[in-house]
Length: 322
Image 1: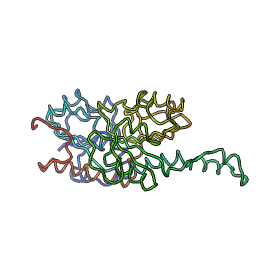
Image 2: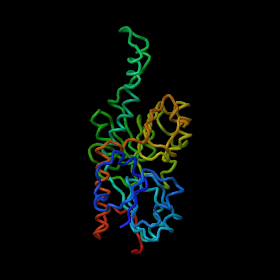
Image 3: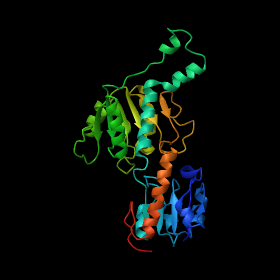
Image 4: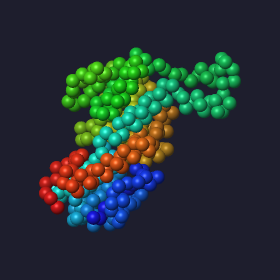
């Protein structure tokens, strides 16, 4: 079976053992694949794995043997699902593998914003704190999260985990999702207007869909509590990044914490990355080695379950068998 990994570097740059590579010694592994080489490398493949490489209609239609696409991740917006359905290609993702890691990094962004740990560390290393009553220290303001309200936009597994951590710090938790579920003792479900109006901290955890693309834009931000903190570790394009930068400038937002961006990689000239009140990380919430090992293991199970006729984690509805 011809199996091709088109961009495996971010997932497994250490070359951790991976069962498909052991079972199929002719498996082709590419750390990265530029757009102009995607078709050439995937054309004769029966199974393809991708992390961030786009597989659009034009490519899929020219891969006559392709039966399976494994996505190294939870999001699958890099795949043209309509084309995959029509062509009978099964697409499988890896849900929930990064729940703990992403929630952890979301908390790290929030704590850096309110505790200024990195700022204080740089001050100390530069020889600061020269006296007990040091203006250089007192000029750096911090904030306590106890008693404040955090709003969770998208209350899936990651949103729930982040909510539980916030509740443990004494925060009040509000949550919004399209289909509210029974109260879980942590969050109170509210409508979108209430969420943005009452949240001191708003954290985005929803998927990127046609409905959520650009959701956090000018009109949304205008209804937020003035001076709120905005966090996004979900998908960059849920935010209108220009509008968010404007909100930082006009005081609607006091700070922003980001791990994802509408276009990645985001360079130093990005309007939010360069802003002094934005804490930015380079899409690394999912990257602890333990997390990526889990991702690799489940992606391997997805392939073998498909080959055994019992596919799991299927995100589309392929219409025909190829």
